[in-house]
Amino acid sequence: MSSNNSTDKLDRVVSQARAAREQREQGYRSKALKMYPWVCGRCARAFDEKNLRELTVHHRDHDHDNNPADGSNWELLCVYCHDNEHSRYIDAGYGDSATAAQAAESTHKPFADLASMLDKKK
Image (cartoon, rainbow, N blue to C red; front, side):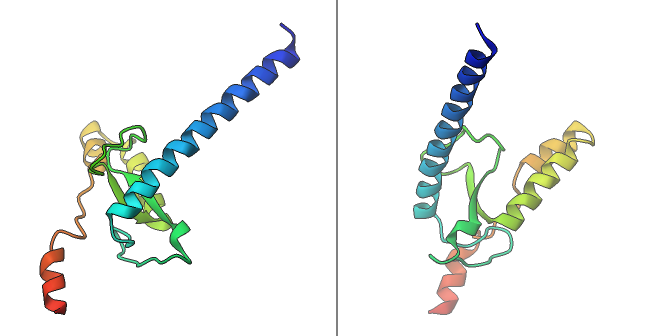
């Protein structure tokens, strides 16, 4: 097989993998945006149609293929908080394994008391 054919085949495989990833991301992103309020789960920044592209879907277990229909592995984070979350996860990997496991679990529950907050607004 010539080098050109190998490169072409590799380019096709990479292109198909990227397209599949983008399609998968669009699927869970659109579902998450329908399920959850357009608010960052960490900093509580609110989003609308104008800046929605800055709101991302974070996988709590860091497995982008784990997309349960109930959305239990997702949380919406702004791009800044999402980047911070992944940085903390990577940094924790340099320590002991117990610390890394703790970093993988999301501990912040921004909507835990949502019902009472909504009742106060009434």
